[in-house]
Image 1 (cartoon, one colour):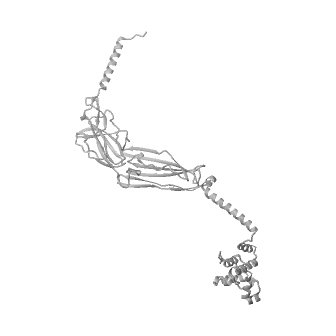
Image 2 (cartoon, one colour):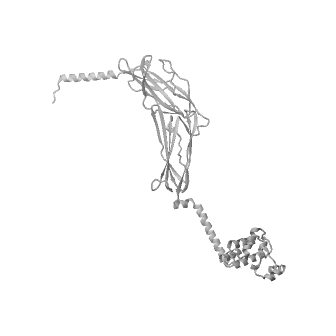
Image 3 (cartoon, rainbow, N blue to C red):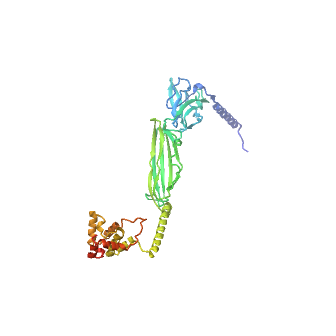
Length: 453
């Protein structure tokens, strides 16, 4: 069994009591004296003009634009020093987005009436979402300051209430149209083409186009920047929007926000594919004007696969196939018909020209001239110089298909009326012609190749 020295035990007991009493003395804190702490609160960039030594009273109402970034400043000061960081209650105002973008207060000192004061300044950004009056209720601020005689004092002080007004800055803007307010905006648009075999400029059905839009803005909030790349419906492509990337930062009083949107378009059909343009408006709170940004559209060309081609032109292919089948049926029926019936005159004439049987073709022309025009001379069909030169070439025995076809068309130009009656004695035509021209018939005979016309 271990022996304990009574003297050492007494020393340990006395030391424990001393530590306990010292800790209790240091833990005792007095309530903060209102004369040791001052608090000021205001919105906007203008500092309040208060009387020295007094806390801030309610200020004149400030006016801002809807969606404009408004900074709420809360400044706590003491002629001593802060034993701990101040803590402010969250800002809650209906119809206003409040964001504590800087999680630390700004510490600085300032001399007032020959005395050095320690300051802690908080900044909270506010974004009114509609027109109207807004009131910031008094906010609780927890403080802990040092005392001249040692120790510290803690307590809670309250800011005065603040009222401000927000209005639509321009008649060109409305609550129904997405827009936001900022002091500067920068927009970037990027395209990336991804194919089945990698990345390249040649697109095929099934390849993908990635569109990325990044909007960087100052003095706004990323959630206020409107969505642009919505899920679109198109027969040419299928869109797949990706999750948006939002970022809000604060550095040395500079508030920056960015919104990055990305959408992947998978090509469904070949041909020209145009991805649409996008337009949005924003209010320049620095220049007090509405500005419009347009993101240009872009057209791509994709090659068809066999399946996509048949799918894209199914109706046209069906129509062409139907017409081809109809044409085959018509040709078949015509061939069967003309196997038992005489062929049309134009077909017989074309066959003669194809076989280069010029004499038979010439005889057929004169026969049709006598039947359709009741004439025997070709030169009487027209008195123009062009027709005279044609007849001269024909009479000198020129053998050309174009020449014969032209004369054939001239002879066949006049058609008989559909309702005309046939001749009762068609065989008398030759006799009538012979009686009217006995000398020509006697001297030149009945060979049609000897006629002048």
